[in-house]
Length: 193
Image (cartoon, rainbow, N blue to C red; front, side, top):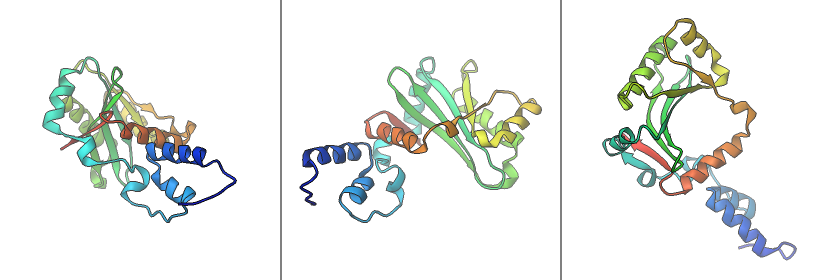
């Protein structure tokens, strides 16, 4: 452990504890302890643990369907035609602040990433996840990929899309918020298909 007589040790310990609680143990090691920290699975989301955050799909989904009147459903799209087209299907419980990751599409075959094919798959998976047709999914896409939303709307493929506003926000602060949610038991739940 280090010794620096010009700094209040109690205050430094508080800062280190807060960083560890937020999942920033690499910052503590690098900035406070002068240790080498290498990237990898723990670099962005160090608190991610399959045994803590995953629930079997067939266990989670009846709970989701049974509480669908309380939940808000979201689809978040990161469109691409020359790399991976990624889509997350989420549910959020505003009463408990729980976030449920229901499913994903991770398509790297460029022949399947055109707007019509992807939007058809997205709508079908929404219906499969929550069969109740009265449930409204809120669909968000990366604001830098307006071509996708324009194509969906111009071809009248149904549904609505809203651009994200991620450029307005600090990326590190947003990642820190996710880390904090991961650190609280039961707030960040992923279906383990």
